[in-house]
Length: 130
Image (tube, rainbow, N blue to C red):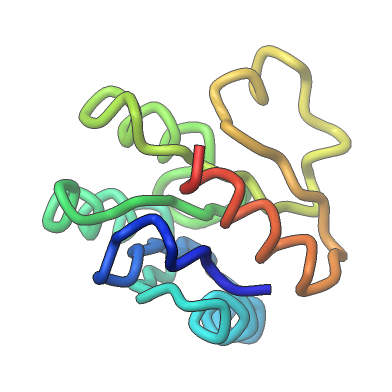
């Protein structure tokens, strides 16, 4: 599944992936790149917030883990949406099933690990096309 290019948008949408597990970060990056995204990455929540602030006008989607060094996924989501309320933040985490509704309510989407690549790509495309 690829991004719908008929919308007249010539530039690739930009996703920021914030994930401390290098293997997962690389997998998510490759999946989204194959679907037509340009991808920025960060290895923890603090670096993710820094990357977002540096590129906030260009980032179309943030994909974040929950449990990470420096800042967790909820702190990332709050920072992103405080600065850019229209930027969707997707939580991708093994912890999603254990988090309460209050924690999850700020996320545009929640995807529990393990997931298949199509689930990530479909949800990412859905979030940027709406």
